Amino acid sequence: MDRKLTPYVFILPFFVLFGLFGAFPLLYTSWVSLHRWDLLSGPEGGLGLANYVELFGDPRFYNALFNTVSIFLLAAIPQFFLALGIAALLNRPLRAATWWRAGLLLPNLVSVVAVGLVFAQLYSSGYGVVNEVLGWFGVPPVSWQAHQWSSHLAVASMVMWRWTGYNALIYLAAMQAVPQDLYEAAALDGASRWRSFWSITVPGIRPTIAFTVVAGTVNGLQLFAEPQLFDATGNSGAGGNDRQFQTLTMYLYEKGFGKFDAGYAAALSWVMFLICLVFAIVNYRLVRRFVGAP
Image (cartoon, rainbow, N blue to C red; front, side):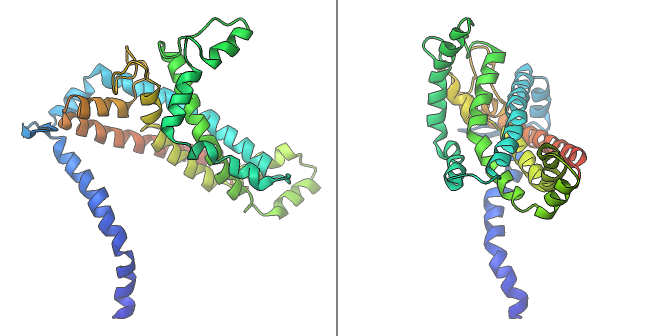
């Protein structure tokens, strides 16, 4: 009896916490999404799928979806390639390698509030460092928050700065587990370092790449803190005067905590869940297809 029950006792805390903070909120949110629900006064009547119908007819939802996907692609694609390159450099013998590796975590350890405030100053249209540097090459000042393309680039750079080093350390740990015999055999066959990297290292860490791609997809499609702090208009959750960089999570925040429409916000959260799931599956399959085994 002890051997049968003890393992379940050890894993019971996880399922209790998951039930309280994972499964129950998920099911409760689905129930709220089917009702007219004020955040302060509570339910005001059943609507069925009316919140979802209103959501899919809402142009602001599609604007937020486009902004989210655009910022995600601008941040994620360069981020993963930069992380791979940095990890490959740190995988070679270096002096003070521990310090270099520890330094990669500093951007991720800094408070996101501090990161947002610093980057908002860097991209300031009046006295920002970025515009100052562009002026050296004859480029006129850019109002980074006023345009869709410029605000997306600015927010994407914030995301890249925070997460590139973190992913690089994950890749580095995986690279050090790749058997050295494969590199020795490739060297005997006359393969260059570049060829060995793409034919041995990258396929050898394919599960790690898949993990970071899936995790990065989920985090990227729920982007909130960086664009929220980048917004200088003072409109909480608006994402600029013309909603030019409003993400899905910001729109959810605006509807749920700005207009207290909990039913609509709950429906949006479930649609976001499905969007994240679809993107994660597609990206996982792309990694599995284009990154072969060594």
